[in-house]
Image (cartoon, rainbow, N blue to C red; front, side, top):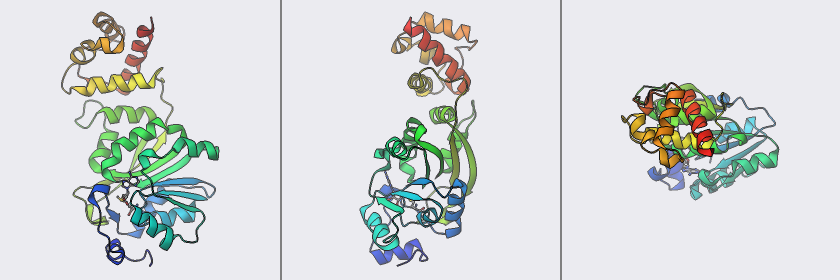
Length: 286
Ligand code: SAM
């Protein structure tokens, strides 16, 4: 069995069908897999974690470029195929049949004494929880090259005041610099998904100014976007008690920061959210 076969033929030979519940849309063209791996710019002594290795389209190139590949694949049949048929004699490729959302990136990077590169053609249904996980464990990540649904990519890159701007746009921009690399249409996958896909590179960023309490920043952003089209008066001022503050204190914070509380959450920039959460954190300690 070899990877020169198309995913359709490989799956047929294995007696398997693509599982929608696991977001199985396999890359058809090796040159697209190569482009994704090239975008990581791996150094030969690096460890890379692959999310959802599938039939190994990316994994074979990763194995050529990295010192060690930790290939996560939740589907036991595919993990076994990779282990036994594609990488039976490749000690540098470790196939783990595991849910990436439970993977300990921090533990692995601690063990290695350096952050790891992360790559994946993502199962689309886990994109948001995975991004939140990468934010929480960003010290463990040197960079990530991820393929996701075009519309999710647009949300990550969105600017304040646009329809795509949301919780993910603000929080991801706090933690990572994101760059759009290229898009791929449905014909690049088997089976073809309903939507276009985009590949992004995320590089951990030191936010300036930093949030004194990143968990509070996340809470403030979520509250401000909780009810779209509502003003800050209706979201943050009305819910001041949730943050250990009075509505008067909240109004004073808006006045001091020169933020009109008649604005909607979706018009605030990351810098304004950081300034807001820092003031709220100071006052709630008094
Ligand atoms: N990398 C392969 C490719 O590009 O052809 C497969 C990509 S496919 C879009 C996503 C893969 O992630 C599938 O093989 C699926 O079984 C696997 N997967 C789904 N959920 C997962 C999870 N929570 N953790 C790890 N792998 C998962």
